[in-house]
Length: 270
Image 1: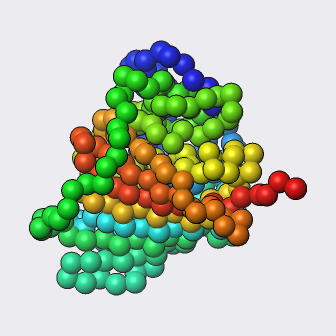
Image 2: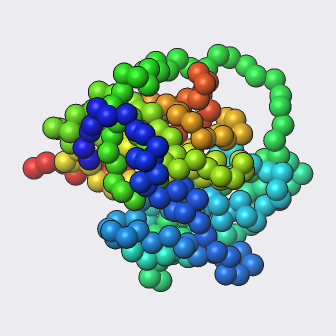
């Protein structure tokens, strides 16, 4: 990764693929799907892309009035971005207000990820307690981060140094190409894609010692909408038994719209 002080203009914003491209899937059976995007550069498959595609697949099997409110995924094997993935969706329940789905993501005949998703009809109710305090850094105080060309986001970072190879823990992000579909499922999948972009553990463990992601959870507190800048704040948590855990908040218009948590493996230096 590299940083630049230049603001991102319209030409730069369209240099990356659209999120609709990277999350696109074809239905190949009643509850089975295949991804259509293959990265031109190859390499490891981005975990956020897998989660987004699995969420879109699960959402395609529920009633249109239901939106995701939580998901929990496990990363089991490294995938390749040079090949499509196949997604199988199982129905766990369909109630009056809630639906639950399980997705199995396979590549080359092996399961690389699983994910459980819960959906609910959109309702308003009483709200208790203020949002937890998140110190949002002004967008103007952040630097544009030049991401990999296959990443479908613009990112601006705060307190990030290319010298120590850190991942940003406080940053702004928006889709590289604005989302065309005004669809809560697509916007939720885009936030899932974003949520795996960095880690809150690098200052506690160090970039060189970080291993693969093990599992990842997201809770959506609002019907997702993401076409403008949103702020991500990641905080380190426990590190024990060669696993590290961190959490994060996603803030839009001054309000927390989603929370996330992830566990990662790490390698102790000898």
